[in-house]
Image (cartoon, rainbow, N blue to C red; front, side, top):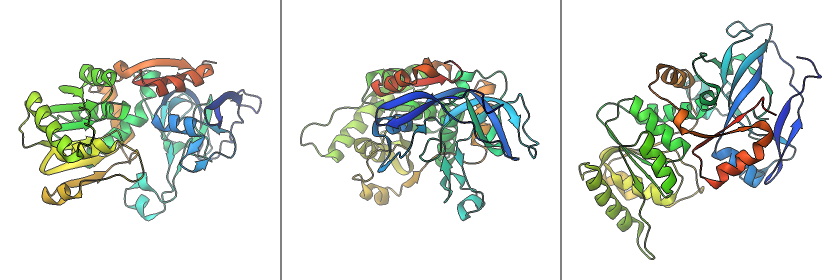
Length: 363
């Protein structure tokens, strides 16, 4: 690569405003690799960045390259790199952990005290044609995995981390609240890990249909809450009717996964799980929600949070795709060239598609 090599990138300028601009290519250090990025998945955090001009109160102060679910081909390696070679196809781990803090040293790299995240300002993202990262964050992928599927490896790794935390296994019944990309990938992982029955719920009929078509044994719309109805009363009625229709013991499910961030789903998830069971919170919504703490104690629930991924999750994701145990092609419902990134973001906002992929070299 030279300083004159074009590097088109989707840059966020402010809320709801992106442009395709030329971006400088970072210098390749001795431990780094330069990747020609082929595909990038778009997720809810990208949409949040796009819609708000940043994350939370941290609005961007300069143009930010979006994207963090990417894969591509190594085109240059640093002088000290030995495990990755030019020509290797790789998935990019977008969370750069320090490897020095207590959490990193105890295997909890996903909650590194000093992490940086691609597309989390001020760190630039991967929705560009060329991207430089530490070679340790480039994970080899086989030629049998399409670029479109490779753009889904990162969110699948997030689902695998959740599966590890929840201890998915044979014979279990799992309820998933929220049938977006994360919820569906959790279902895919649950199926690959031998879970016997998967129940899925959402407020969108299209997403319920996706779940039913792909991995759920039972998928329905969540019932509406009547005006003035108590959450607890609503959740108990929801549980009774859903478990009966799904053919599940009225006692409850083994594991509830909340993948939407909606307070109502948190209430339902806690209610659906049987005593001694596990509740996993993965969806992000409001910072503070009403939570049924009485159920946690009375039913002695294991309540778990799950975020990002840890060592081995990317490799497991790649192995599951390569082996055919997880086929992600059916959930990829729209593919856009880099030049139409704004349309891709608007498609995610509209919500008719399950997973949207951008092809970075198509300008």
